[in-house]
Length: 325
Image 1 (cartoon, rainbow, N blue to C red):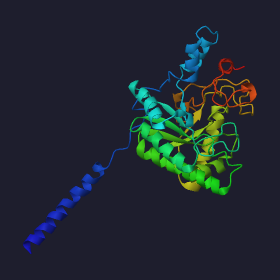
Image 2: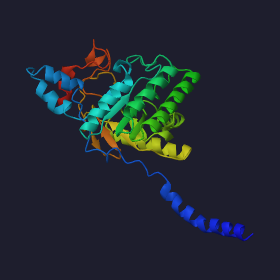
Image 3: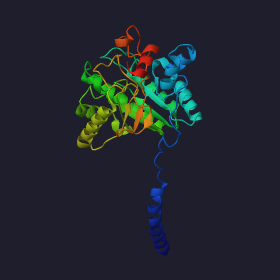
Image 4: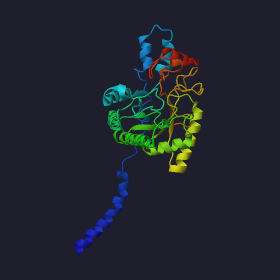
């Protein structure tokens, strides 16, 4: 009996120590990728950088190099990227070697741009997309990165059935889960369209249904032209709806690459647009202002990019965008 009592007393005496030590045993919050690096990565192989290097005698090359190519911009990854794990690993590795933070856009959603049509393509099936995004996340690994996930995916519902919408939402939830587990030091932003597309309340519900709670935040204005203050106002409305309906809010980032003159209501290669605030931390309430779309890269066969394909670099469009005409 004495041994039993002694054992019980010893266990009780040890209990406070266990309780006291428990919190310190928990994993510390992951550090900010901004704090893990010394600034944003400038991609030496961006399309304007490659064009300027290949055309040194062109009168536009210096302006394009200085005003566009030397600004940190995102690299987009999709079906054109080849082995996606290798491609992402190479890009993130180059940024890590420079102690810089890389910006990546994952753009390979099954059924992508089904309604708009200019940027159609993507993975061949939901299962193919699941494999692709798993490899994408694995390519980042434990290194710091910023990822914008599937621009347009939540605005492009107009021609989709409810079953297709649910299928897409599930693909995004899985993608966010994969990135969260395999790329723990990446900040991932689920794309939330732009102020001129879907009303903020509806977008809040779409973001929530697609796994926003698993993401760092949401992105706005990708490949569009709305002013930063317009995006900030829209983001505040999205967050208000998120808080009221779903009990949480999230930070946001804005694509400022082409919003220097604001929007004229057109989205596909409109004339008279201008580059915006270069990539930076903070601004107008955003967590970051980022160049996500490369200035000068076409939106498709339309507007001042008539005859081009989506993603094709057009030096004259880039040059005019520097000066806003």
